Length: 153
Image (cartoon, rainbow, N blue to C red; front, side):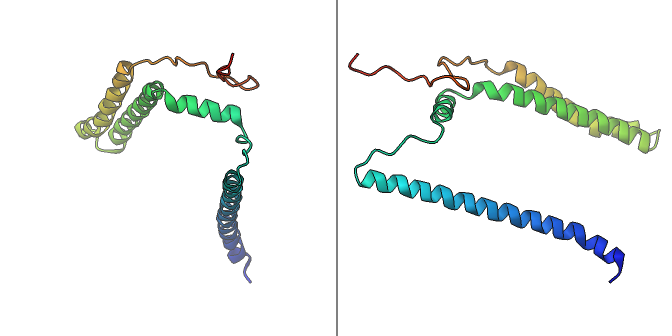
């Protein structure tokens, strides 16, 4: 067989093998999680108290994040999108301006300027987003979860 043909098949086999490995790994994790859920259900049906989740601190942290409004994550997202769009817009202006005819700079400013203005709108929108401070204490790694005291005390 020709060495050039073998050189073409090596990356193809590696890509197909990597995708197959990812699929098999995902299916195995799904099966393990399904068995864990069935075990919990069986314990509950027998009247036993199942143990808490594997990471109770992480579970509490996720529940606290879910309970509060998600306003804090929107402003940085809009800011990043705005800066990225402005960069792409200015980049297109430069690219079309230098690659195209030097007499037709209006199309470069029109195409790139549109994206730059859209990016500026996202950036300005990020400054108008509400700043919401969380009212609950979130434990960090290694700290006990924020659990209320028992009712009897």
